[in-house]
Image (cartoon, rainbow, N blue to C red):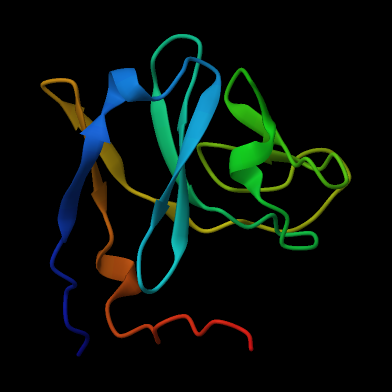
Length: 120
């Protein structure tokens, strides 16, 4: 029998603080999240790591509901985290909702994950 994971919603700020077709990074002890805002004001949260070589997706170009990685141009779906086209791989996605103009992200999947260590 498996245990259900309880949602762990955190308020990360106002949607208006993210430019349209842009992103902001949310640094947590377990991961860095890239929170994106599309031209039509939809929001998405992905781990800020391209599935190809770990590039910072938050620095990529948002077009529609995709982002192009700034390192090698891989295109990643904001909705699914899946690499598009002939590329294969997936960035971790996080449930997100907007309430009263505030962005809430569910980070429950990070529970029990080791804290990131800085390289020496």
